[in-house]
Image (tube, rainbow, N blue to C red; front, side, top):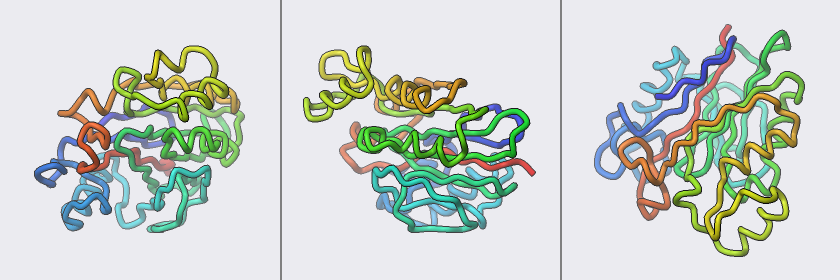
Length: 233
């Protein structure tokens, strides 16, 4: 588990370590639709929530579709087609899953009414505006963000159909040859939306096989890590 220390919130980026799943899903797989045994996944979610004293019975998450939709969370909600959740309800944990895409957390810092959001950010969602939508949900003033583990520019080869819109949208420095820097692209999207404080982990899911699941490295047969967050009441 990798904690993001932000006053008034509990936020953790999970790794693949510390759960009960086996084989390609070993061991802390949080993805029920990955092909893993769902009872093991449910136990992994309980373990992950327990790490930040979150109530797993209230855990909310989306059916992720690489969109720009960010929804207000309801306790134990499942299946809405969206890629972001936000809440200002104390003690309501929200989860975004990833396995090369970026998990991003947003939090109102300082004296504002506490609220937190989690986003699933892949190349399609980033171009579609998922980051700006997450910022709008909370309001840009006083926001801080953390960009979690995702496939890095060391490993993320893309075609021209992806490279061209990224060069146009995010400018110089997000591509080296045909390798895309999703971390920097996401940071630029956050700053363009008004987020001044951006924390980056810069951990590559494809490189660090002992620590993270990677859809690309493992040819699709793999688990999911993610980010879990809630407002501390």
